[in-house]
Length: 240
Length: 289
Image: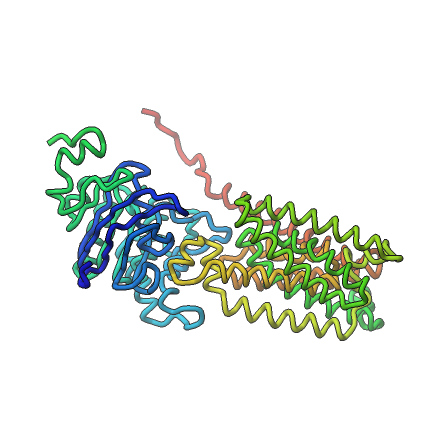
């Protein structure tokens, strides 16, 4: 394994309990890199993301995030799940939900400071969630909820962003916003891991892993997304 | 006015009952906020009944009922965790199984007592009008412990109530903070049973916080509303009990569920009114294409 990589995996097997969903994953993603996980439904994209977030234990092999075991330093890794919970019992304000993104940094008791409030405001402005800052998240549309949850992840100020289908439910403007945000995060040195079904997203990646409950291909887009790999994964290729 | 104040001014047992029940109400407002937000009402119910065999055994052995209740709560919490993990049963199935087993065991043990009916009634419905300064001291300590836990753990508790994965990715152990939440519920049940009984303490854990959830946007506000509703329920419930000569603990719980019902109806009426105002009015002609 390279010591320089932000995310390094060697013959990693991920799954639930003792049941592996994907085996043999090798990764070496540098700081500022964009790793795109693409593949069929149930191919293991979300399972791999949860493993990198420290929410699932690796079944076999080795993996480090920022040189430590996944989940060991929650301040430096932020995770956006595929289906963030928005049906809160209380009508929590969007701004309060985004502010939870600072809890990893402030821990149990340290109060939120001005720089935390600035980070929350900045994250909401970047995702467009500021327009609904005072509204209850549970009353927002699906797209507005997604912008709120994305803002929470940005407010984290993490060095690694794990995003599970962040454009789900977003309109064209929202998709463009996510693409811009990923570019901005990479420009400040953050590493982004993106699970997606969009080939256009994969083509912008530094590394692509094509999954179908196994690693079909892994490498730069020009290599990983070759026609034979796409045919092997999906049974057909994209029209050129 | 005299009807509202005189029973407390003239009778020490009423003053002690008011202080004891308000302390229970405040403890339950704090713990119950998280019972409602995390959806733990069934766990609370199970804990309230699960302590019965512990209390019954303690009474038979001549030990403090408080010690027995604490032992019963520990057995119940450990049992739910064990059955859920080892047998891979859904949480509510595990809770249901243990709940009825512990309740039945409690009744069996109590039936060995010579004063079966009196003991069981005292355990299930409490002895509010027999509150002592000692019991009030224990309840005040429970309130302090539960409030300190809730204040310290408010961030992981809020995240757990939203999404367990969110709490874990922020570095908070879901298992530890869930256990602390259950411990707060257990402390509320164990100390509250002496005042309002094991059957009725659940009402104080759920009804005032549920009223708070109707109006609050933050957990702290919800607790404050729950505390106010709970304290008001104690005062009104004790007055009802005094003037109508009915059971004190049950009167308090009935008032607290009544406050919830009135608040829920008032909120729906207000919402319906707002909705009517927002409907478009027929100011002009609609032109169809």
